[in-house]
Length: 140
Image (cartoon, rainbow, N blue to C red; front, side, top):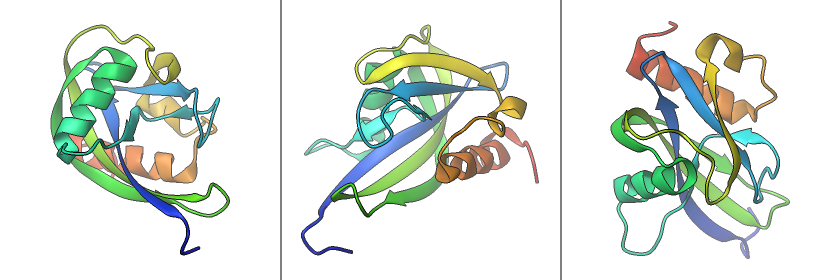
């Protein structure tokens, strides 16, 4: 790690609906601008992880969710000049209609079986699969 890199803690959500679909957003900011990703973002000073997660989901998708549990942790380092530590949770929708807002250009529900074919960051694939296993009883 470059010792001059800023370290940023972020949160993201694998959002499940009643049909077992996952909500992905198309990013409008780096890292990964224009790519499908999990809704989430940076923690703000004074927030807990759960508060940051609920705020980010609400801001990017308009949804209110219930946290099911930790899905995993991912990191982005290297050329971006920032070392991102991303703490990912599985959540389920409790109210609202998914709409792209804030940092999202699009918000779309995908059937879990279709996620593997999407051109996502490998860590996003891993986190979704882990949430499916832990929170939805899908996979092995």
